[in-house]
Length: 157
Image (cartoon, rainbow, N blue to C red; front, side):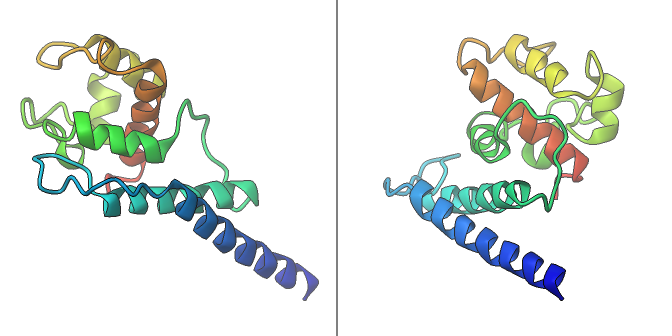
């Protein structure tokens, strides 16, 4: 019974942390939904909420992440702004076989499916993919790599 109460209190604390983190990270910038490819405040809030839930779960040992170079939630925002035009839902509109799906990353990505390999590809580009090293900082590239690996592991759901 005591173990069940401990888990219940952890869940309640997790929910409180999630709400607090979401409230503090919400951006009151005007919605950019009328811009092509823009990110709305609602999308920012949704990503912040998912990040807060994951962070709280991580804090209380409810999940154990793989080694990660960056922030998956922030990576999702950067991906949507810079990568989703060519890679919607982890696909590849230029070369369909070379998608961001797990099997394709394992087969085609130089160095195999890892955050380091994704970071190298994003920074330097390759074939039809432009280099983003001059446009994105190292932290942003690491965040995108974390998001890509996490999403490919989850099947881009």
